[in-house]
Image: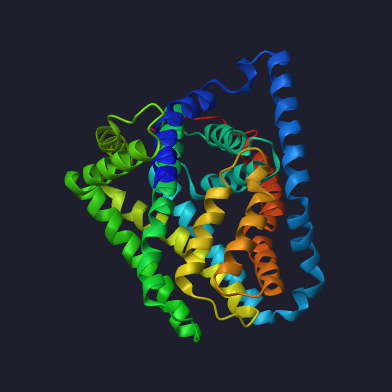
Length: 363
């Protein structure tokens, strides 16, 4: 709970910095400062990759075992990841309020790909998507507001996922049938939307969550600067986000929940493909751990940290060590590596379509 409180606080405080970074762009940063910052990130990335290299090597070594997975499961995982991307595009289309679908799709794919390969990739990827959206004719202020609302909503939903794992853990047992695993995924989607709708529609539940997180965090970290206004800040951020999304906030919330539910289903499919019978609740906790590790900015996309953490937590869910490594590789193949060439193709297509077009702000 202390960690969640810290992440919520950091997300709120970091929002203004991210907006400022997108708006000013790297062009306003002195060349020497950019060079020092790049060198620092590269150094941290190199050290971090060295530390997690054993786990990363084990995962990459599973390439030779990929033929053990049935082609049908690989097709299912590709389809689930396509649905994950479709939900994210739908969310951004609502939040940005203006750009064409091709502009949303190409800018998201390109920005996401850059975020996965560049040191400190999150901000760099957001800056690239911002520039591509503006090039496509979207107003700069609307691009900043829409991307900010998208990031806050997606991160807020993933923070709620561990709570949904508790009933499944208490229930016990293993997932012995694909139908049960599918039911778990659908239940996660429905529960996420219900919880999100309540927190958006009513002040009381959201303020209560803020008070609980604030109280627990302050008790666990007595020597740190205490949180004092987290409930009100959560309410303010919600009001800001709803102001951006407008009357379509339900559609945006549904798209966000679908984005995480289909991604989680991809991991379940990877485990089913290797014949594993893992407890869905613990798998959900493993999935949440992977998403939080992906936020670590010292390696692109959490590379290495996600592989190590996901393999370890899947093993705790009742999967054998070798099977956990193979499942992690299959999941990361579709969620991390395959979107990279798609991003390159999207960037080239976007450049050809919009480079010569007049930049006309959308009203």
